[in-house]
Length: 156
Image (cartoon, rainbow, N blue to C red; front, side, top):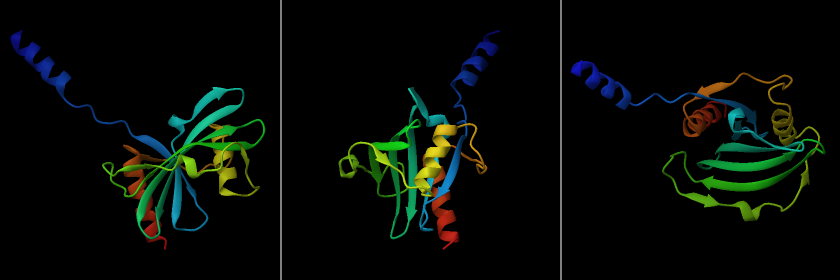
């Protein structure tokens, strides 16, 4: 019986593998960046408003991850930036830089046909998004961002 108790403690102490997260990719229109949205992080805050982190990976001059969190007004087709944090590398230990203050304050209207309209449609209609692409699974945003950077390099 003592053996079973020790075995139970060892099993409970073992690390549990991370559950993979689903990310959907959107082209930035310039072939040097890609936006990733993880549906599990879309928050419905009521009254037709949703908060969506959009993870933008760029592989132009250098690799970086820009996590811009936006609030979408799904009833009037508007959006505003809640926060923007820039990481100057695709390493989770890189220093975050708060760039929130460089964004336009207040609500913005997106242009028809813009990539931002795609983000808006995805967030406001999730999970019933028309013509959505397949999801890719990664353990976290850092793995997803590195895979996106590799895809950008391969397609240049």
